[in-house]
Image (cartoon, rainbow, N blue to C red):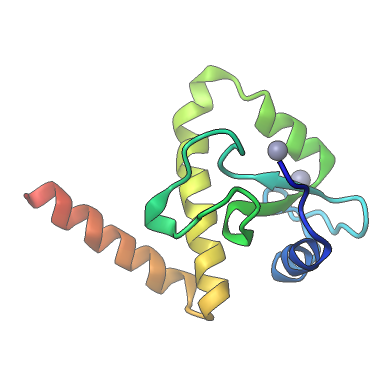
Length: 117
Ligand SMILES: [Zn+2]
Ligand SMILES: [Zn+2]
């Protein structure tokens, strides 16, 4: 697997305002870039993520949160699954400069429509 190129890395740092996406700690060169979907796993087609190093699949984390995220207690599995989905929506929102609330509303509308079926 290719490593994340500098352009993508710089983009993620800029998009995430050099802060940890979980705790908000300011990060400079010591941030970790985390893959929301594992590089060897199935990537979410709905999000337009074609390869795991796509910026929509990446978030900036501090080393501590990164470690926690990789060793989550089983009881938090559902929480982290939702967090991951929201993180992708946040990434798409900033990519297209759409307010995050708008994109969340849209996602809720889609979920409702699916449930009504
Ligand atoms: Zn953190
Ligand atoms: Zn990671």
